[in-house]
Length: 162
Image 1 (cartoon, rainbow, N blue to C red):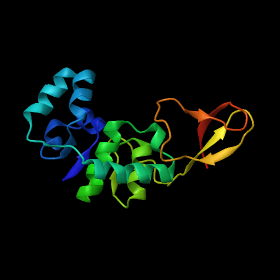
Image 2 (image 1 turned 30 degrees about the vertical axis):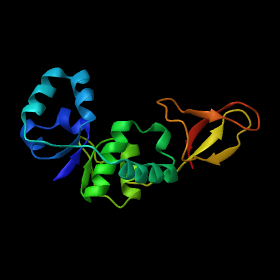
Image 3 (image 1 turned 180 degrees about the horizontal axis):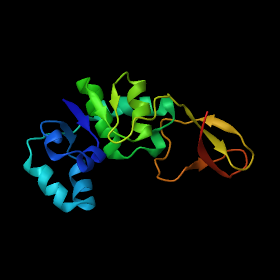
Image 4 (image 1 turned 30 degrees about the horizontal axis):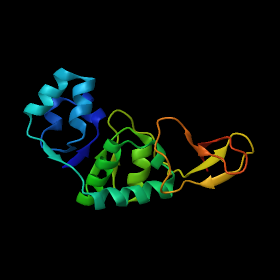
């Protein structure tokens, strides 16, 4: 058994998805992306779960350590937490999810890719004065790289690879 990211649910042959662990939070995501595929997935024998707040907190700490937290969604965090709590493989093509899972010592497998074998650490860098700092555990989560304003000059701080 493995924990499947939404990319696996959308890309893999339907029979390959059967009996795998998936997050309840993915249901809405699947419905919004591909309603017909959602109906097929919903008819399968899937192990629908959600991580506990404690399990998600472990992932928050790990993702803060690697600097990936600002760019992870609630679904991403739930899937990583399920993989960590079950000590099972995480199947995803999302580099940030792979990065955090590896930090936790979890095996990762790609859906359509094999890349992303290096472990990266992210820091915040000001676009104005170039000051850098570690990503804090209470960093704002955002699809954009603007995580916070610089304490020194007020310019946006963006995620950059350390």
